[in-house]
Length: 576
Ligand code: PEP
Ligand code: MG
Image (cartoon, rainbow, N blue to C red; front, side, top):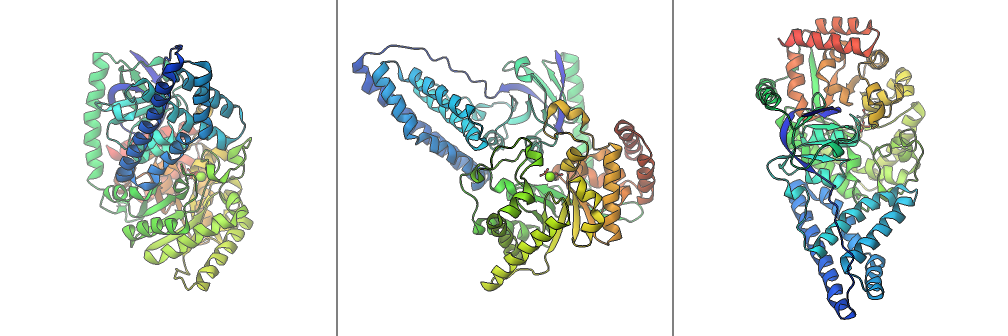
């Protein structure tokens, strides 16, 4: 039995056999062939290409019907690799010249291709390496006549063990076969971790070296709430976790019992509890978990894993759907937030030394008004179908807010010119996630309709900790006194200006900090859907005045550890 501790990325406990993803190594022998075998080898290669194409289209169809067209488009890039004439012609010409078996020739050509792409300092081309690798393995598998080894083969609710998880693998995880996943790299608020929560799969990331410690079929316990992963547990440990699972189920049922009730404190203070989503097809889960509205719709996922950008009509249809489904509750659409760990290949953004401090989010949108205004027009047009609001990410000062609003005005005028209807009074909010915005919140509040605190970024910038780097994850601390002070000053500035303030960073979904945030006066929480029942339960179990006292006491503490212990104890008292 080995016990490892990683970063708790998505809550819940799962027990199951390990499934090693991406560890598929082919041993391809080098065999000489006679020239009369060449046509048969070429035919084998061509049949493998056709078979691979068939498999990808099949997979695409399945994902399209299970999850939606957008996710299925991930595989368009894979189909393109299959049509790469250069790659195909090199295999055939080397086959003729060297007279070696096609599997060997293909594996050599593939290695060379991947090597060349890896050498290039260009994120767009680097991203293509994963596609080439993925498709290349499929082709090789078909040449060798081997059965595909992938997520489709995961049996008996297995636990995925991988160095990192690719977008296409994450998409395929919608299949109910996946019980949990663990990865070598990643941080608590990295893109992978956020996706795990939206898929409701327990996950532990940043477990350095886990792929070298686990063997296929090993029994794993994954505790996504504590970050503990146990390899081949002994009888006693297994029993204790099975009991924990039972207990957890009981606790979840207790939380679920209040999911459709209002989040109102014992002394009558009502709080709005909204959900964060990445895709429109998460709306049913929001409703199922009692989310009142959507406080953060991360629209950049719409642009991911496709060659082109979504058209204005595609944007409009997606926003219209979400607006209508959630009506009369509000839906806050966050405008395109690319950069950092969210890379969109179609925009060919050059590689940056410090992407989180680089050309991201509103900075990119202000420099590309064509892309930005297309999205703004779609949001505006959809605003007549429900209660839509919009907000800008990464605002660092009032000038950016004004520039963005100027483009919003232009977008409105363009719609007017075409006699297209929109809600002229649509609320426009600012994400407060850059320390300079937090410190000038009073100035921003005069020209914003609402604030939403993006703690994922605010914490990384104020504590100088890369949110997706497991090496410095120990410093990433939402309970840090600096974070609490910043949050308090943002809330106070908003209230002074009589605007509402929400929090949509992952911190809003940390049950132990909920009492402090409530006491600091946060008006709205926006969090992953499955945490909503627990938060409602907590809010309904405390008085607002007591929460205010807890917040005041927490602000007097000196370290994040002290704050965490203090709030955990208070929460335990309330929930007992
Ligand atoms: C945040 O930074 O807190 C946030 C909600 O946005 P994202 O996680 O998409 O950067
Ligand atoms: Mg952010």
